[in-house]
Amino acid sequence: MLEKTGRRWLRVIHIILVGFLMGGLIAIYTTSRLSGLTGEALYIANYSIYNLFNWVITLSFSGIVITGVIYSIFTHWGMTKHWWVIGKWTGVLVSFIIVWVWLGPAINGMVALSDAARESGSISTQYKEYSSRLGPSIMLSLAIFMTMIAITIFRPWGQRVQKYTFRRSTILAAIGSTLLLLLILGLSAYFDLESYRKMQIGTPDLSQIADGNYEGAVTYAGFTYIVEVNINEHTIKNLKVLENRNNPYASFAEGIMPRVIDSQSPNVDGITGATTTSKCLMKAIEAALEGAIK
Image (cartoon, rainbow, N blue to C red):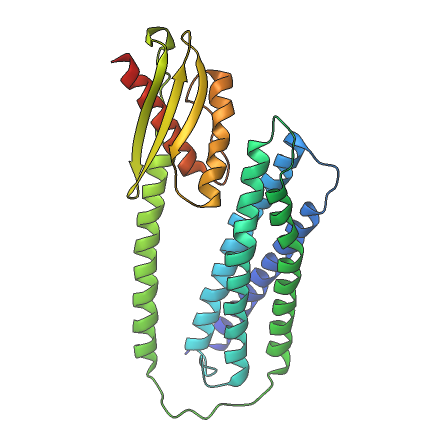
């Protein structure tokens, strides 16, 4: 059990993290409401929102869950002994669904679409659809966290009658094993993604390539990306994606195609929010050009 001083410090940390989370959500909403932005300015605003979400929201939410679990296990409140505690965990679960299933993908889509449209400055209908999610998602999330704060203060509904009880050691073992498994899987996925995101992309010598259409492919996570490159007079004239993953965020990565044609090289900046797929498509283009030289 935590001593009085330990409980106080844990509450302080928990409250600070809640403040960061709510402040981050407000900052995202405020930035998203800036009007008249196009091109590079719009991308910068969305990139700021993207970083706020990935760092402030993700880290503070993770900290809230961790400190909440510690407080529940190592104090007399428990995780299921009181209805108000169950209410708070329900709020955490609902807010997780709203933030990571609804808000997160919308932010990812906005930054990817604004990145791909930096040069043209045109805003797609899909971008507007993603943007329309932000306000309701953030307001609902803030309302849930305000409700959870009120629940913490007033502690309504009383204590729950428990038919079954578990030892603290059993709960710790279950939660510890789950967290360890998630950590291993998360780190494995992270390092795998990083290996592709940091792939070196070469610039094949176009003067050695005859006119024609050439295909290149690269495989990642069990899926093969295939690109066709059209060469005319030693110049990349056209690019066609023959195989790509069937989801919106993979299609955002195809925004690199105009950049490749403009720079006459597959080594260009990837699309923010679709970095891994961007790299795979670049590598497929490089493979097509290298194969044409051979």
